Amino acid sequence: MRFSVWPSYERSWDEVLALATWAEQAGFDGCWYADHFMPQTEDDSVGVGPAYECWTMLAAIGACVPRLLLTSMVSPVTIHHPVVLAKRAATVDHITGGRAVLGLGAGWQVNEHREYGFELPEPGERVTRFEEAIRAIHELLRDDAVPFDPRPSSMELLVGTGSPRMMRITARWADVWNTWGNPEERARRTEVFLQACDAVGRDPGTVRRSSQALFFLTDDDVTRDKLRARAPQDRSLVGGAAELIDMVGTYVEAGVDELAIPDFTLGATPEQRLATYQRLHAEVLSAFV
Image (cartoon, rainbow, N blue to C red; front, side, top):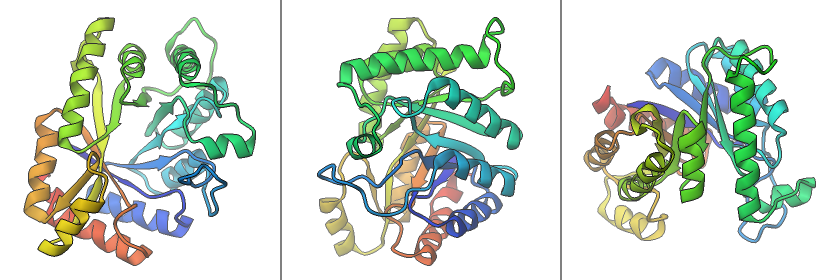
């Protein structure tokens, strides 16, 4: 099992660099970074607050921190032209010595598309365009008949999805399938993914699997009950260290290769977030090293 940190795109460069530096020293395997242009809002209004640019941040982390894998979560092809995105990711891969993972998505966040002037088609057309984009990127990076240079040596293509049609596209073209979910939700989606692999003739054992969930570490019974009632049920892990160890173990048993821990629920300040990561590492994740 690989473990990765996932700092919010709202965090300062100093905090992101400090987290990545600590994570590498602590034995984490990767750093994920969301590719968005503004914060999401419940009513799709303009998001107020910083949203640092994903690929610039990944290149900077990679130049400063020499070992972590660097994953975009995920770059929407509604915003990034596939040729430009392939060139950008390949460049970051060379800068970082082969550590980039190109995460791709069909695009979904309404406010960033509207406010920056990017078209966001209806879901069906969006998925059709996504399939065209990932096929083009796949051929640019791996088909010797297509002139494209520089190429990465072995950069993985990751798709984050839970929908059946997108899963079939993932099974055909991607190296990594990613989805949100607690162990129960992950198991439900895995059944759909296995069906997608069968539909396109792909051996599911050749697709690496990654996942992420919101972590809530607490030893207080009252706090735990309140969190379980309030946190998103299908994507949250809530409990004390022993309970979280059991939950993470379920991912391992299900064949998940990498689990990312977002910092979204870990504290209100940089110091609190880092302290929670440190506690999770010491009390939960170390059980799997």
